[in-house]
Image (cartoon, rainbow, N blue to C red; front, side):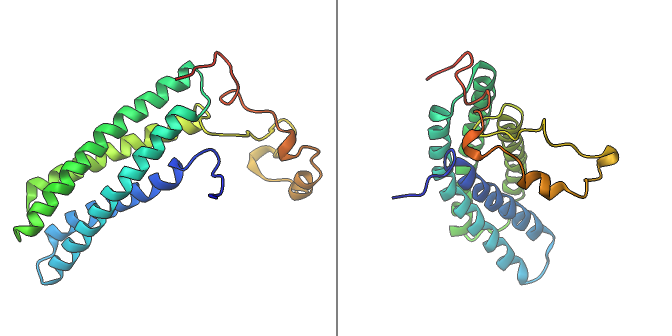
Length: 194
C-alpha cells in the first residue's frame, strides 16, 4: 500500500519536472557559449535532463488531473485551478514537441541549433508562469491545504522579533492536528464538483 500523500502526488512530481526542464535549459543555453570539447558533454547532459523532464511530465500531468478532480474547491479556486491546468497543458505540449525535436537533432548529430535554444528558453518562461499559477492556486486559494494554522493565538513582538518563549507557546497550545477545523477551501462553501 502506498503512503498517503496529503492531499495528492502532484506537488511531489511537479518539482522534478520543473527542476529537470530548468537544468536542461540552463545547460543547453550555456553550451552556446562554450567553445571547446566540453560543449558536447554539457549539451548531452542538457538533452538527458530534457528527456527525463518529459518522462516526469506524463506522471506530473496525470497527478495534476487527479488533483484537479479530487481536491475540494469553490468557484474562485476552480477558476484558478482551471487557469493553471490550461497553462500546464500548453506548456507540457510544447516541451513534448521540443523533446522530439531534440532527439532528432541528437540523432542527426546537429548538436547546436539556435532556434531550438530560443524555443526552449521561451518554453521555460511558460513553465515559470505555469508554476506561478500553481503556487497561486495553493497559497492564494488554499487548494490542497488540509489545515491552516490558528494565527489568533500566535503573536510576535513589534518589528518581527520573536518572543523568548516562542517554542513554549507552541508546545502549550491546546489545539491538536485532529482538532483543527478544515479551511474554507476544503469545506463545501459554495461547493463545486466535477
